[in-house]
Image (tube, rainbow, N blue to C red; front, side, top):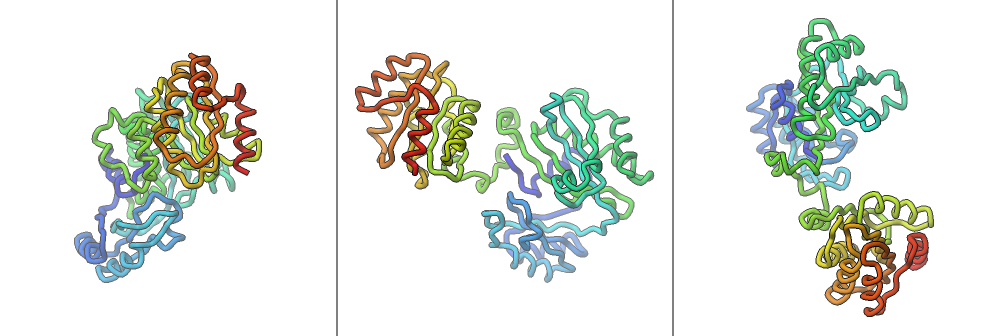
Length: 375
């Protein structure tokens, strides 16, 4: 679950990280009032879940309230990364002496959490990694132990943080690590962390919350942003189905994320393009399978549906009943290819045959048939 910048800044502030004061505005008049309340120059920033806001005209400086209103008028309604700007954040403008990059995230290779930092702040970390990988410093830490003070200070020296603010940097680094853990985040990014007037301030932030942990983060539920997902993706989430819209024409239904990823790889290797990632989940019954079919067919780009089930907890007979149920309830207008093996396979195949359907024994043959039908 991605958060808007103003939401991310609030979580940083809750963790004790200094951020410039800011207000949210939905129209130019509100932006002007916000500028008056904040006093002095402000920066007006589009609030969308897309990168490249500055290049798209979504970030503007304003000297006063009139300038803030004009900037908001220019930004509101813009399309940035496929998202329409509905709100802007009006924040105190600061004089920047130097910029740093700081982020906390999982280090999956090491099996621990990691703090990543660079003295090359203000630009995308991927660009830094390409141009000068030695400019990126990392330090690992545990979920329970957090970032040790000596680790934070050593990192500060590696980044040439000015001596007067090394203590402040150490506190911010530790708070960034804590913010990751406390909010069950998969990314807490400050870019840039700036030195301004002898103070370190987080003037831009990006936080992503682990969806799988939201059950223990009830205060974060209301922060979900509608533009983050399509209506179909929202419907899938509410049904307990993992669904991601892709750009192809082969609609996929699979049980298990690993099998789903393998199926997508095989489709592409055979010259096809998947229309979605869909994991119907373990133990899915006939009703759940029918819901999954409904989600797939809601995509007008789908030219063929490919079902790939390797039944373990999921029973093949339940899947077959769901497929037959969907055929009876939904306006089918595309061909269907099925691979069905595993628990209660014989009964599942019988149900399909009685409905006039055949199933492949192997994934590759099912994929090739679907790719051929999709042209």
